[in-house]
Image 1 (cartoon, rainbow, N blue to C red):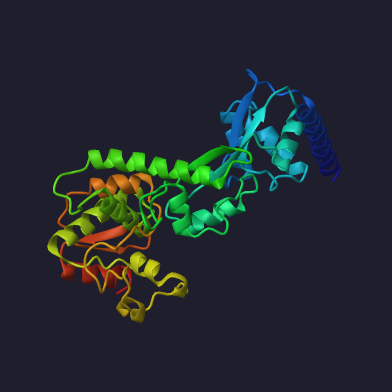
Image 2 (image 1 turned 45 degrees about the vertical axis):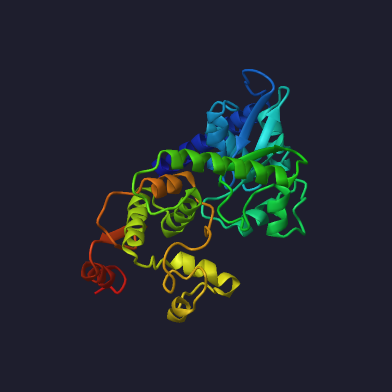
Amino acid sequence: MRALTILLKTLLYLSLTVAILLGGWLTYFAHSPLVIDSYPKVFTVRQGSTLRAVSRQLTQQHIIQEPWSFWMLARLTGHGNNLKAGSYQLTESLSAYQLLNKLVKGDFHLSVVTIIEGWTFRQMREALDRNEHLKHDTQGLSDADILRKLNIPHQHPEGLFFPDTYFAALGSSDLVVLKRAYDTMQTHLAEAWSERAADLPYRDAYEALIMASLVEKETGRASDRPMIAGVFANRLKKGMRLQTDPSVIYGLGSKFDGDLRKADLLTDTPYNSYTRSGLPPTPIALPGLHSLQAALNPARTNALYFVARGDGGSHFSNSLDEHNRAVDKFIRGR
């Protein structure tokens, strides 16, 4: 019993010692000036980052020397979930605690807008509208009005803007971000088109952009994109309908409730790839660079079908019989 008492006292003493040392270190860390190589120092906190990710980003950008202390400081002060993504600038020496407050307040140097691959233009506009640091010149404008203001020679905006993270001066017009995203997409599309494979079933770069948007929506797995593009290219060459659900869903618009039914596949719209041959009339989403590259350099394959395996990837088949067996296995579980 005496030995147990001594052991408990020892453990308590060690715990108190560790707590005191930890508290002392965090106090020292919180109030010591950051070691910055030169000023002004610009750094970025990426959209959607967790506290651990923010701590790693600050370390990688040489704002703090190691991530653990900042992570602990933010947790203990109750600010772990309050850090705001954006572009920041340090113009003078400050402490880790002052840095934390800067991130909590969102004391930005530049406005940051992140556009996600696979978003629709509507979702892009919503993201711009939510940004408190932009001037919202597009509010109240139709999509066609926006295209006219940007001198974009298209009637439909879908797919014309490159998904990426864009920086703009505080108070900049949202039209500035849109123009930059449009120019970026045109650059990437032109480069991919100039390096395209031979014998593609597209009349021009815009049709390649449409294909890229279908590839983007069919899979999030980069390794599958060239194969999916290869299947679609093969079907177009053979005059087969693409029969891709994301295009049907896009054509349904606000009528889609999250459940694609057989009746939807039979309801004709310009985007119903079950009732109409060829490509849909416009892109159906904002494709990223990997999807653009896949559309212009699809895999050389004989596959004409694919089905989701349930693990994020797809199973590809050369014949309808093989495809039906794959559907039984991966969809129906037979």
